[in-house]
Image (tube, rainbow, N blue to C red; front, top):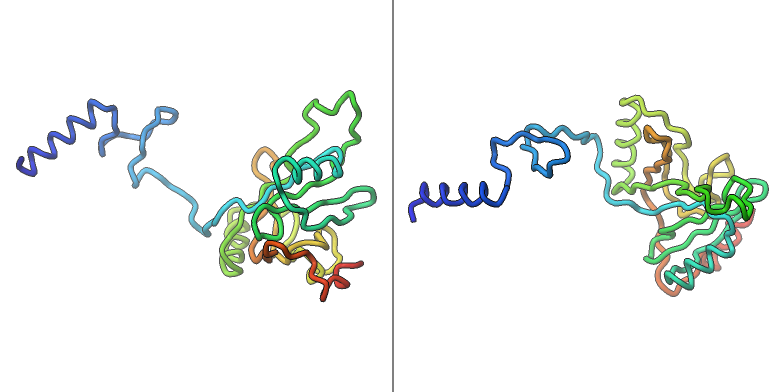
Length: 210
């Protein structure tokens, strides 16, 4: 089959199968593939992955046991948070944490326990390195995004200032909100905790005691 005939055949197949031709315009919710020149995306920096999630829970002990026994997560450590709360770092890889459990700020009763008071505390987006993290910080500030917490370093190296997770992973972080008020974090440089090791290691455990 000649090249021109082959292309006509492919074009006919695409039309019959409902595929989008190169001349199609992008229409929302129709499952269409937009032409490259019609797609405008912010590329001031590159997100590597969703790195971890923070979950507000009504009982840290109960949730810690559930994530450990039901989902198989490992407890990295737990530290106090505020006057009466605490946070528990948990992992299923060698990252310092993949899930963080936080004491819910609302007083929970049997009557309101299942009425939507439990929620994500934040979603953390990892970038490759410090250079990419600085680009992200600068890019979002240029776009008028308010940084609601940070920039900061989580862990004893970040000091004891407000918002620092003292038992944290050493990551550089800052936080901002999406239009609906969902809390987002961009971070880099999370330390690893190899399988079978404890955190903190015995030789520097004293550093993590306030």
